[in-house]
Length: 365
Image 1 (tube, rainbow, N blue to C red):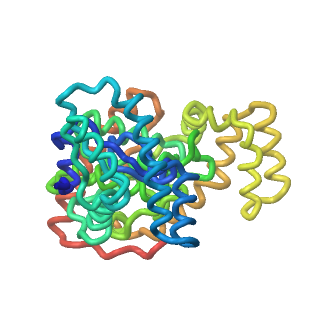
Image 2 (cartoon, rainbow, N blue to C red; image 1 turned 135 degrees about the horizontal axis):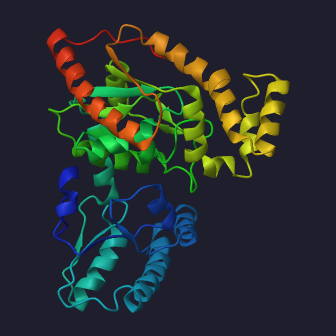
């Protein structure tokens, strides 16, 4: 008997010692059940070989070849990962759709004497649950946007709000990207499906009766797309506008983005601004970077590139209810106080929006 997938929120409480993904490494890298361990029974190349045999020769030859490869790979896992497992070991195993690959490993582990189960529907059952939540379910919790120009420490404020007991949705953290041209992080972004899996998990943990504070973003964070329901909720959401002096923002950016400023490709990233600025401006910015004058560079990038674009987007959201937090500096104490203010403002904005009815949706940026 296969084990049915529970709700997304209940996944962490499954009565299994481990969740084992036996799909190929490439399939696992694209997305997998949270907490799953990759123990492939076919490598990427082996899966491609079996698939080619299936299409170009016949299914029987493909199954025979695949069975031999799978048996050898399961044997290797028995000699390594499973070697020290106790008699009462109980894993949950899955492949793409709960068929031959997970079934083969499940049969062998059961013959050893372990209480192995296979996931009903395999990975596809998980993917369907994620899609159903993100694309077919109406957004419920009230959203409040944390807005502000580049360098106003919005991501840090979100983290502080969470530590103070507020409810947040960290889209940049889930997308592993700082949300700007210079926002790429080491290791790159997760695949779209993996981003959506993380987002679905985060959403299931939210209390729909409390406001959710989300950093103001476009419909994409780096190369990852937000689901339409969440984006629609963000477009009409009230805003907390965080303000800070340009000099303080520049210093904060240098501290926060130092890894990017020191990266070898920073000058190339500046080149991607060519459609918006003159060659002389880009040359000046490259020179500032080369001599290590990062704070001046950060100040000019904000004043001449980012701030005008933020203001243009903000004008398009005119009419949306907004409150302002003006910080004199970006010291840790100021950020901690601003986080507390944000929580109180979010409660006020949510109560005001509920009392006045649904707001008119602003135009799409």
